[in-house]
Structure formats: C-alpha cells, structure tokens
Length: 596
Image 1 (cartoon, rainbow, N blue to C red):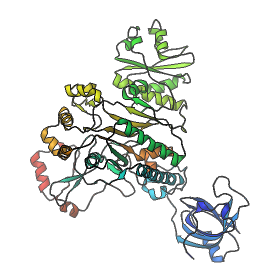
Image 2 (image 1 turned 90 degrees about the vertical axis):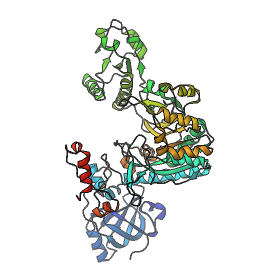
Image 3 (image 1 turned 135 degrees about the vertical axis):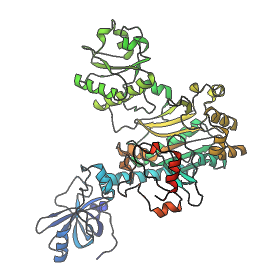
Image 4 (image 1 turned 90 degrees about the horizontal axis):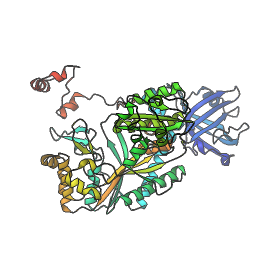
C-alpha cells in the first residue's frame, strides 16, 4: 500500500474534511476501545488522530491493535470532523477514518516517553538524542533555528553582503581560548588548527576588495563550558569596509530587528540604546546587563567614608541595591550565602524597622538618601574592591529580580555596550592583554594615550549587543594603519619573531592597501536560545556536547586505531596520575620512541 504521503500530520485541518489523504509518522499513543482503535500519529508538524473501525479489513485492524509507541506508520484514510473535538491541538477538530495501514518500522519500547514534560535525566536524553529530538519542544527549537538562519541570509543578501566561506583547517594563532589542533599526515610534525573565529580571514577579505562579507561560520574553542556555551558553535560573522561604528551598529541592529519580526513577529524599537561600558558596570555591575527591570546599583562610597562603621570606612568601594522588602530573615541569609559564594565577605542589609548595621552608624539618612531608600524597601550593601563588589552586586540584582518575579519574559530589551577598555590587566602575569583582540582599534580621541603607553586609560572602538542579560555579539572597528598595528603588537609584548610567525600574513597584506573596516560576530546558538525562551543552549543545537565537551550519543571524543596514529606519526603516552609531571625529558623521549 505504501505510497508517498499527501499531507503532513499538522496539515490535517477542517479545510481538508472529506478528502482522502495519506499521512506518515510515529505513533505517539494507541488506544484500544474494543471495536475502535485510535492511533495518534506524530511528525514534525504536529499530531493527528487516526481511527480504525470495522470498515477496515481484519488484517489492518489487527495491525493497528498491535502497534506500540514510536512505531513508524503510513496511514491512508478520509478526513472527517470529530464528534469530540480536542481544543488543545491545531488538528483537534478533525480526524482520519483509516482505510489502509502499513507498518514501515517497528519500534522497541523507548527508554523514555517522547513528551515535553519528561523528567528523565538530560544525560540519558543526550545519549538517545535522536529520540529526544522527536519531542515537540526540541523540534520547534530546531525549526526556529532554521528560520533564523534563513532570515539572516535574506537580510544580508538584500543589503549587498556576499556569503563567503573561509577555511576550517587553518593556522594556530591562539588568542584567549585554546585551539583544537589537527595533525597533518602529509607534513610531519605540523598541525592545523580549527578556527576560533574567521577573524583574520574576514579582514583579509576586506583587503581583497569584498567590502561586505558575511558567513554562518562554524567555530571551535577548547574552553571550559557553561550553560550558554559549547566547544563548537555557529557564528554569524560580518565584516564591512569604509565604515565607522555607527555604520556597523545601524545595519546589524536592523538585521536583528528584521529577524525578530520575521520569525517571532516581535517589534524591536530602533535605534537600540547605547550604554558605555563604564556606565554599565557602575549602574548594573555587568557589561551584559538585563534591562527588563530596575534595581540599579548605587555608589555609597562617599557617604559611608566617615560613617563610623569600620567595614564601610575601610572598603575601597561600598555599593548597594534597593529592592522591595519582601524577604524574610531566612531569605536574606540565603542571599548572604549567595554573595559569599561569589567571593565577598558578607552582605549588609537595612530595613525601616530593623538593620544589620544601623546601630554602628550615628545618622543613616545620608546613606538611605543616596541609595534612594524608602519605607517598605530593603537595602542590600556590599563593601569590597570595586572589581569584586560591582559584579557581585550585579549578580545579586539579578537573583533578587528572579526571586521577586520582576522579570517579564515576554519583553526583549536590547542595548549596545560601547567604549570597552582596549586593554585589561592580567592578574597572573601582571601584564596588559587585549580585551577583545589585537586588531581592535583604539578610540580616536584615545590614540595619544595609546601612543604614550597609558594602556589602562585607552578605550576601544568595540561594541557588544546585549539582550536580556545575554551578550549576543561582539565586534569592533579594526586597525588598518600598519604603524598603529605594529605598536599594538609591541605594547602587548609580542616580539618581532612572534609577529612574523603568528601574524606575518596580516602584516604583509596590510602593506598593499587596506580600507578602514570593522565587523561583528553574533552567536547564532545564543540568539536562538533567547528567542526559544530557554536558558540552556543545548536545547537549540541538534547534537550538542555536555559540559565536559563529550558527545555521549556517539561517545566522542574516543580513542582511534593505532594504524591511524602511525600514519600521523603520533603516539599516545598513557599518563599515570601523579607521575607524569615527575618524568624527565629523557624519560619522555624514551616513552615516545618505544613501541607502547
């Protein structure tokens, strides 16, 4: 009987009533009522109810009686209106009165039910990802991702950008995260690197005359993972020539607004607001602030300098937030443990009727006035180094908003963060490193500071787009002046030999005329994650890795055959815990040369 389907399950609507159709899909459930058998059939578009009664042959009825969940069926029948409509699904007004059935693939009992509210552990779901992906919510997310990608491509194409692919096997020029390395079989002892970003290639494309480039680029970074990061990810990569900051921000915020309108029918007000980095840190304690609620940080350092409370007086920075007084003492204690877990020593608090520190202070009015405190409020204060206190207050701000249900998840609050520091001090080495990357241009008005080597004062022509507390993209105007680029390398302590080795191709290319240019890189996975309303990036990637960078379904990474290692002239030294670091160079050499 099997023939091509005529309709997807989700397309069986009242308009098709009376038509003879063929649907294919997976059995969601089967219900036996004796003389009637109901089969709910599911595909990626939805679920439709199919009915088997005494009008079908005995063989077909018995086949329908024997099907179990996740069996793949092809069902032919006539659409009719249901006598008992189901308002919870789009196809709930109709059903298919089956006339024929073919079992295409029998299924074993799956390790978990294919339901959105399944409570099975995520590790199990990742092991059986092909089953997990059958759940409607994940199918919705993957379809949403597809729609976003197509909308992005349409926007950039209409606006004169060329989609150009750049190499996956490239050169290791580590900046920040570790590279994934690929040994070369043909070139003994040499390695390719998988790209952390197409950064250098896209700048070279600007030198090549392709003045508007974009790419949905696969990128890889061997770094520690978080809920919103993966070792491999997709970047919407963009570069433009003959532009300044306003040009880059204007067209890319239009892209984002266009995608949200096309995919979610959400209107994003333009232009997006801009917030200098310093102001973002001072007001929100973060360079990726969630602006869907208030609770801004208040700097109380000046008004507490001679307040009589030594904890405040001795601190380099005293800051606070004012929240509604809806926390009991036990809940405040939990907030105290929360901030201690972030590295500060404690949390001071004050209410109208009671306080953890007011008894040490003669006059509370200057503090409460500076904080904007009123009756019915709770003032939470942290005193520490600014670099620790502000981000901790920022995290506390977000935690309080969550506990007080102050966040409207239907709102999309965008902002640009601008004027980032060009350099940041590495605490381990005590040296300045590039906060973004060594190709980022200093702000024009800060070039004199740059030339004098006052690195801590230099701002970058860099920018991030932030949405609801997530950084969606990062970019900058690049250095196109070879003298400034050379000085940047020198200020970062990169020797001439290192420059030639790591960036010689860039230096050479820039000798032949390069236009002013700038660009941006969006995290596609993170954009889709926010649009889908989830806080786990694995929910929007078909085959993600765990937080230990393992793809459990295929058991990757895995060992490889010795013959493969031999072809690459590689050997694996089995490490014994606690002994590897004690090996001498001679012992390592012996292990390498021996046949293990």
